[in-house]
Length: 252
Ligand code: SF4
Ligand code: SF4
Image 1 (cartoon, rainbow, N blue to C red):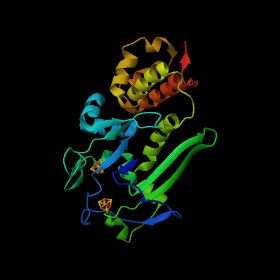
Image 2 (image 1 turned 90 degrees about the vertical axis):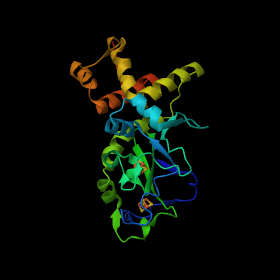
Image 3 (image 1 turned 180 degrees about the horizontal axis):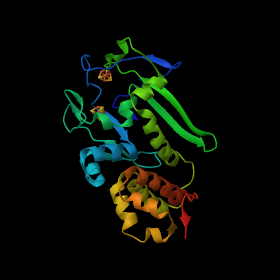
């Protein structure tokens, strides 16, 4: 999700299944969109970028992100910190474009579209709706190239991002209760670590008695030591169990 600072009234429903748009280095507005953003990062975004930069998740969070928790938000979200100057540019933007292009966040891939998603009913699966983000500075809409939604998703490598992010959306949009106030504080801390600070979560499960409390396949446990995506999916199962009591773990 990308929100601009003055982002009201720029979202239009994606009517039909196609839109006209192109973005390239020669365009007059090149990289203007990479500034003044509240760019929400998902756990999968964090994995991709922190590994690209060769950073521990804690160091990445400290250097590049802010955490926000607003009224009516059930969980805190991590946003990419813009540069602390008048232009408030993204720390990764250069005159040649995005310095982390192959690992740019899902929201940057989706732009100029935006996606609202929720799991209203687990039996019905993910509900999603797409919007066009029509910002006045974006000249891409004046270009002739026509995209279908599927073509755009494939071109931007979004199917993999959505597959990963959907598992997390199930947690953050769940209508299940988090319990008493004291439970909520501890659960928030666990949510933050298991969602965003994955290297610390790895320390937590491997330097505690964690695996003496749950049945888990030895090969899978070994994989969690080096495979961040496997660890993230395991962390999601743990969150569903520890936050909501769902049967995603098997206690011994
Ligand atoms: S403002 Fe639009 S056309 Fe210009 S660089 Fe950004 S996405 Fe591309
Ligand atoms: S991560 Fe890359 S694409 Fe996204 S706002 Fe920053 S420079 Fe632009």
